[in-house]
Each structure stands twice: as C-alpha cells, then as structure tokens.
Amino acid sequence: VRPGGAEALLVAQQYVAGVGVFSCDGYMLLSNVSSKDLFKQGLHPPRWPGRGPEVTVIEGDMEVPRSSKTAVILDASVFVKAWRAIFIDRRYQRFDWTLKLDPDAVFLPLRLRNVLRDLCPDGVEACGAQYARNAGKYLHGPVEALTRDAVQSYADSSERCMKNIDVAAKSEDLFLALCLDLLHVEGVPAPKLLQDIHIPSMQIPKCKSDHAVFHPFKLWDDYQDCLTDAGYLLHGPTHDPQVSWSLPSAKSAEPSLFCWALVVPAGPEPALLAEERRAGVGIFSCDGHLIISNQSVPLLQLHDGVRSFARIDANLFTPRGGRYMTALNSPVFIKAWHAVFEDGSFQEHDWTLKLDADAAFVTDRARRLLGRHCLLGSRDRDINHHGGNTGNGDCGPRYLANFGGDLHGPAEVLNKEAMQIYKLGEGRCRTQVDYSDKGEDWYLGLCLDMLGITRDEEPLLLSDWHTDGGRPSPCNTVHSVFHPFKVWPDYHQCLCQSGFSTDACNEAMQPTTTTHRTTTTSTSTRTTTGTTTRTTTSSTKTTTLPTTTTTTRKSTSTSTTTTRSHLPAPHVPSWHHHHENYGHQALTTRAVGQQSRGEEFHQRPGAEVHPRPSDNGSPMERPQQQQQQQQQQ
Image (tube, rainbow, N blue to C red; front, side, top):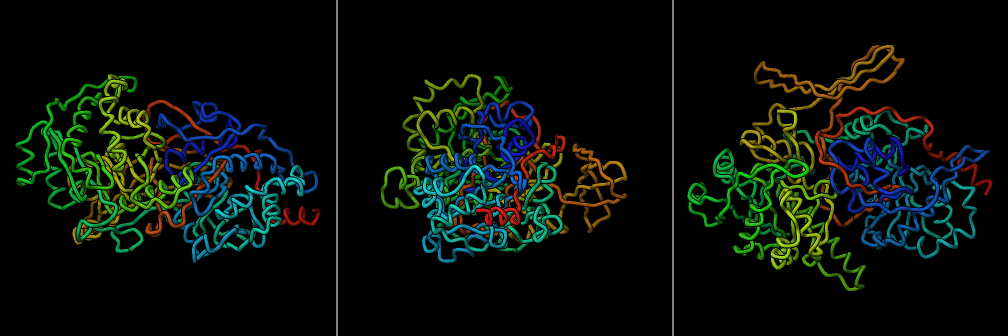
C-alpha cells in the first residue's frame, strides 16, 4: 500500500468492513512506512479499532519510473522485496493458494474459491506448482494467484530469477510470469478470475459478471457499488442452500459449542431470552449453555427449572468512564467468567462463546467458521514444530478478534485450550492487568494476550451497530452474529433476513425488505444521497428514511436516475456461495501496507465523503504492453 493518500484510506475502509484482503483466511499488508504513518488521522474512518491491521515494512522508495518505450511502470524491484518478506514470514505454507491483490481490486473470496477449485479439482497437492493466467495467456497484476507449491518454488529459486531476468526493466507482473516460467511453474488459464476495465476485451458494464475479482475501484463508494452489483447482499426469504440455514436436528455437530450470557434481570433481556428459548435460537441453539445473573428466581422461572443458571454477587448496573467513556464492567464479567469456570461445562465442548442476550446468533455458520480456525491452527503447529497433522480438534489455544484486531464484546470466542489457560491464569490477570478504566472486552483481550493465547482475526464473526440509524439495518450478510436487537420482533426479523429457513420466517419476510441508494446526475454535478425504503405490499404503508451520506462528483452526462443496493456497515464480507469448503481451498492475500492503533470509534464507516484520487496513481500494465516487453526480452 502506498502511503499518504487515497490508497491507504481505501485499505483502511476495507479493514473496518472486513472486505478485500481482510476477508481471506490470512493476510499480509506491506508498505515502506509504519502503521502509525500509513493510517494516521484523516487516513482511516472515524470508527477505527485500537489494533489495526498487522504490517510488514519493506525498505525503499515506492515511487518507481515508467518505461520510456511502453509507459509501463517498472515496479518489479519493489515487489521482489515484498515477495522476499512473504518467504521469510512463511505463513503462506498454511494455505492452499496465495494471492497478491491490488488495493483497488474488489475481491469476492467465496467465488474465488470456486474459480480456484476448478483449476485444481483434485486439490492443490494434485496440481503441484501452478499459477493462474488471468488475461488470456498473460499474467495481469491486479490479482496474482499461486498454489502453495508455486510459492515454494519461487522462494527456493528467486535468486535464479534475479540473475536471468533484468528486474529494473520489468513491471512486477511480467517479471513474476517470466520467473515462474523459468522455474517450470505451470501457468493455467483462469478466464473467470479477473474482470479489468483497463482491458477492452474483458470489459463488461459494472460488476455484474461471474468473475471473482473486479478492478479498479479507487473510491470506497465505488468499491461498495461494485460489491453490490456482484451479488454481495442476501435477499430473504430464501431456500437457496448457499445462504439459508437451519437449526440442527440433533446437537451432535462438530465443533461443539458452549454458549453463555450475562443477563440483567430488570429490563428487556429476560423477556427476549424467554423468546429465544421458546424458538431454540441464540445461546439455546448451542450444544450447552449457561445463563448468569445476580438474581436467580426470575431466570429460573423463565427456564422452566432447567439447571443451566449461575448466580454471581455483583451489581450489574455499572458506571461509564475511562478514556472512551465506556461501561466499566470488567469487575462484573471477571465474576461471570469465574462462574463459567466453576460450572465446568465448557470442558465438554470445543469452543466457548460469550454472547450478549441481544446478539442474533447463526449457529451453523459459527461451526463452519470455527472449524476453519482450528484447521489453520493445526497447520500452524505443522509449520512451527514440523510435526504431523495434529487434527481438527487440536489447534492450539486461540481466541477470535472480531473488529479488526480488537476483541469486541457482543461475541467473545475462545477454544477449549484457551479456556483452560484462562481458567488457570484468571488470578494473574486480575492482579497484573489494570481494568479500572476498561470495559470487559478490552480487559479480556489484554488478559488473553498476556497469557500467550493466539489471537485470530475473523471479520465474518460479528456484524455490529445495526441500530445506529435508529431503526434496525438488515442482517443480509453472511456473518455468524448480528448485534444489537433488544426486542423479539427485531431479533426474529434479523434471523429471517440472514437466511433462517422456517415457515415463520418465510411468512414474516414477505415482502422482502430492501435498501436502495438513489443517484441523480445533472449536466454539471452528480449528487448521491442515500434513502432507505421499506415497502409492505400487504398494506399501503411505505416509509422512507434519509441516510447521512452525500457525495458530489463532476459529470457531463445528461440527467438520469439510477437505484442501487447500498451496503450495511461496518462488517459486510459475504457472498452467495457455499461455506462448506472453508479450509479446503484456504487463501492468503498480500497487498503492499500497514498496522495502526487508533481512537475509539464514533460512527459507522462509509458515511464520510472523500475526494476522488488524482490520476497520477499507479496504472495497471496491459497484456499488450507485456507482449511488447516479452518480445524485447
């Protein structure tokens, strides 16, 4: 990622939204500046996590010359350094495919899995060393896909490429193609991998084709529009097996889940919890559950005598304070976690989830997601200790960061090994971590880090802030948890929008609730204003809610009006494809970028307006220009 401008801002927006490279199973960002400098104030959204994206810093200038004959940017030397950093890091060995993506490339990871699976139908082990030719017989830079064996071949013999190819006179994609060919890595055609509007033969209006990657989209608004055009959002009701989900007929699925919630006895939570239990959703859809409160009788009555309750001696109404004026509830949750340890039921299950009572929970998606993290954890052990396959149930202690690199409270997820370490170390955390000015999720993250528990980033775990606009925004992305929905009608509607397949949902979701963005273009300016329209055809009532986004762009077109679906924010990485193959075609991505620590978030990302970047950014090389260089070579 180039520092100091629109490219860094675009990557920051992707990070908060969990899209682009951040929706892969693993990622690396590289730049020539520190995270603090790359994502400094003004180059990240107002809602920004304390722990931003991890970064590897490479030395050297990222401003590179052009060829005097072909006008191609001669950036091979910069990317050689980036690839060397990938080789040293070695994380690529965990994954079946490694992809280099340009920051302005719109990326659909689940669709990409299908494209790559077609290239290696019998698995990457059977394919061996291969790379994808995404522009006819050429390799085009916006996305470069290599199998694990191909990356290993490049890592083992990169010096041979440096000696035989003039790096200074090549663009990075041409150099990589020549290098892989020199190393006898097979290039296979992948016509559905990339749609690039810079290549006339591949131009299709908007992003409505079935390609996996679309390029270039340098503004966040345009990036979101492309995602929407490509089929980003779910539209209930549906029986589409790609997005629909249902409760398991028997609680025997793997991995097994133990879920608990701390409930305030005064207020809406007991009534909401009773409805969740009646429907068998929320924590009651897990293999085991526990309710914790400071009053036992009302909750025991709600649960019809089910012995899944623990009482703590604590005042559940906590003050606000600290740097971010958050609820200072760490002492309460320290007692709640201790009650979970005392109960001991967590030891019978693979993963423990603390869920807020108002968090809508999609159980089977969570199982698939957590199973993938355990598989990757096993591969980590294989790489670090050179052992055999440790199995899906032995992946090392880990917890999930669900808002960038931060642990965010509505859904806190630890595997069994992490729970056992936390149980043994809870006293150490109480004495060594200052929680006087911290919310419980901040404290828990610091505690788990201090105990040496691995933190995995997972943007598909939680979609939060669904009531920032006053009315609930749709749960139309493929996440495992949506928050907050404090009353049952809103909670149930969220489940239905997420693809919950029941008769009640099919009835409740008729007609479909949709979100639109209306764009009006005049002869001098184009002004984009957001409106949310909810229409019920069974009655005559129509409600229109204005949003806060206003964008003005210059245009010379005639007056037109178009309507587009607009993405919810901040966490929205979802696609209309099966999730059954998580971990089988695992992906890691690499763009050239950085890490950050920022201030507390205040508003939803995507609402702010930013100027269009100048045209002096890096243009993409065309295959025709590559052919000229190859002839010269």
